[in-house]
Length: 219
Image (cartoon, rainbow, N blue to C red; front, top):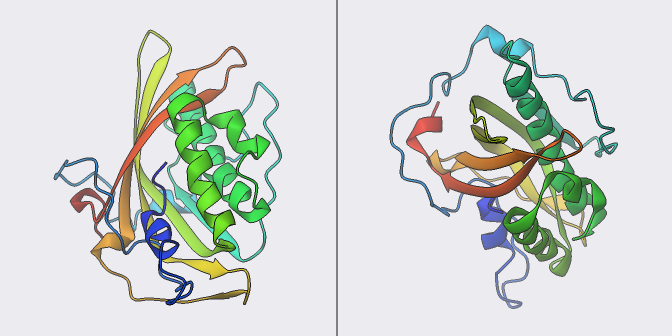
């Protein structure tokens, strides 16, 4: 699980340095080397006014209530394809579910386990645990854009998307303060996820890799 890679860097500082809060997009955990821009990565498009609906149909999804200091923009409007739209909807909820686990300080929070399995679930557990160990959380505004979805006949799919972390920060729970840092190229991150449709009709994430500073996601 490599969402907000800089958070991991910020949380590994020595005790002497204490917990220095940093912007979410300032560290590089590159695992993907694609260099072409994704169409819409410099999004100022009309699509941004029509985010995907948060509640997919079919199986009952867990309720995800996040604090008011977190905000999300999903610039990935519906495609008109039923399966692809379901993947985008579940993808949105899976992102928020991980953040809820951080807010709840619970590395085994049920909402994210509803959307993550296997390797992705194990890495997400470790990711959330880092926050818990350092008494840290997240705050700020997140924007997700330029999604690319592909569906296979065998019940698997892939979802790639960009994240703008320029206004997202680590929050020290001891002081309830966040340190805001400048936006850099590394504030823009690309994610590649592998999913499958489970027996509940939910698109669950099995694997995820990321690259901060991705040329595909630069504005």
